Amino acid sequence: MASSTTTRSEALFARARAVTPGGVNSPVRAFKSVGGTPRFIREAHGAYLTDMDGARLVDYIGSWGPMILGHDHPAVREAIAQALQGGTSFGAPGEREVELAELVTRLTGAGRVRFVSSGTEATMSALRLARGFTGRKYIVKFRGNYHGHADGLLVEAGSGLLTNADGVLGPSAPSSAGVPEEYAALTLVSEYNDPVALDALMARRGHEVAAVIFEPVVGNAGVLVPTPEFLAALHRIRASGALLIADEVMTGFRLSLNGATGLLGLSPDLTCWGKIIGGGLPVGAYGGRAEVMDFVSPQGPVYQAGTLSGNPLAMAAGLATLRTLEADPGIYDRLETYTASLAAGLRAAASEAGVPLSLNRVGSMLTAFHQDAPDGAVRTYADAARSDTAGFARWFQAMLARGVYWAPSQFESIFVSGAHTGTELDITLDAARAAYGRVRE
Ligand SMILES: *Cc1c(COP(=O)(O)O)cnc(C)c1O
Image (cartoon, rainbow, N blue to C red; front, side, top):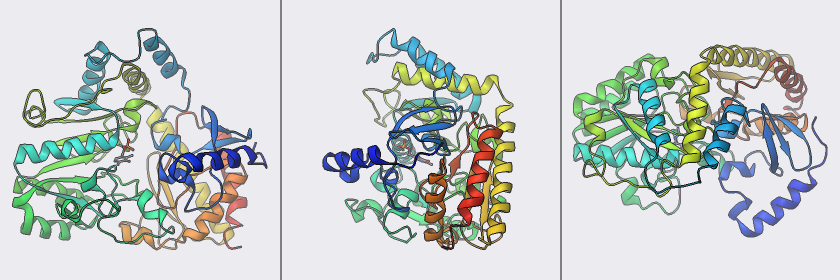
């Protein structure tokens, strides 16, 4: 049930703003693009968050991706509790790191993997490795793709940056203050889903490019689905000697046990993981071809380190999550079925209320763009930017008031978990029918 008061969240937000910039530790949590007070969360179980005022909310954020099994899953909780008996950090190698590396390499086909503590560290390290391996300086990324907040990647990046100004996507390079132009100049930007532009860029600059990094299914400009022609162009970049880096921080273990790479038949040189790989604790990883990975220190000359890398609690949570997924391969079909029904229900509710929607969905990732393009026609950052963000904000608030916590930005994916059942689907679609009625007000 949704509670009508947000008194405690408001009080905490006021305290938080006095001691933390904007009151939050990651920008999109502040609700800037949808307005209102962010809900402070007391606890989370299964498909639900409970806020500080006691409202129980159906959760479609899943901690922005990691919670594919639902919150507080018993296998994950027990694995962490067991690891805790043995202490919280060793600063020396342990068995769980080996087990998780064996599992990840087996599921993904990577030759070697290195654990870090966040997705940002994974992409940052993979790019340093690509530069060290190729001896080249430049990297290529795509407009609206987000790869974490390392300096050279905050160039035409995704949602948190795109929505914070005033909810509107806008070109800006670099997309953050504090990133020297000289850093940004080493990042070449191309348009997602534009194979002609990528071919042209690589023909001109390919000999200087260390790596092309991409989101194989974009989640950070809202969901964007790659076309087969674009995927073919991505694979062609290797003719120039550049490495192909799939950023599967969001899609890894979500779209299949081998991520988008498995689903779409990609063959990247390096892959970055995060989110699900830590099962709700801080873990990132990068891996790929052994001859490339063996450039990483101490085996090779590319330095990368981490005090808490391979942390036993984090490894335990990741292991329990991936083992649970592997033991229940039907989970991906269930996520597909739920999210397809959710998409169909949203489409019906919106059309009844006369609200145009353009839906993009892959498995349990979904964005309903408030615009009148046909489903699937939103393919680029510029397409996504045509959405009615004010209408989305009204819909978001109406959903929240009815106990459904959607992603607080038009330019984000939502995430369904294995804990979402028909009950939550009914609650969500009842709320959606009412909420679409509020969009035009
Ligand atoms: C979340 C995300 C990152 C950054 O991961 P953090 O753990 O937040 O540093 C990088 N790439 C993609 C595709 C992501 O979705």
